[in-house]
Length: 181
Image 1 (spheres, rainbow, N blue to C red):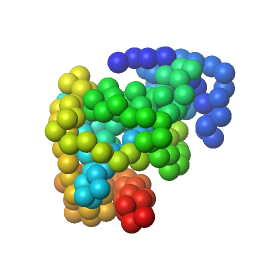
Image 2 (tube, rainbow, N blue to C red):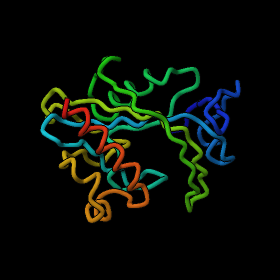
Image 3 (cartoon, rainbow, N blue to C red):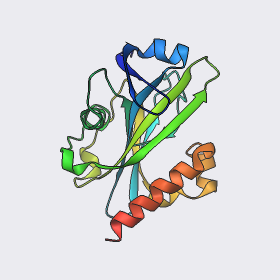
Image 4 (cartoon, one colour):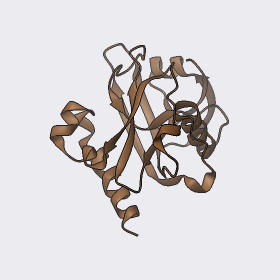
């Protein structure tokens, strides 16, 4: 789905310009996204299987919920919206723990230039997993995996993208740190 998004500098500062997502991807303009990693107190992580209709990485297991920040939308509102849309989970501001930002640049074979500033959040799932429901247009399935899937190279090759191993490891470490308190 195309949507209006704000264009950023490579360091994440607003440029004051907005464009359609498709235009930003065509021209390689930087823009903001949110990543929300939903985990349980029993050391499980919610992952989504991207729909086969997705333009980028169809059919692969991915972050619990992620998406673009709409033009004029706050980062926290985008994170809450994406989790609600993709998982049916209604989170409050204080239930989202922002753990940082990361610059992501990749050129996809279909011509999409993803130059993004990812705002990364953790959120503990405090309801039954069975209450979640996948957004049919975007997601083919959601599933609980052992948290170890984020740090085991063997598992990454079979489930997640191995080239982001360091990122997944950092998410694993932050969740373990949170759960140990």
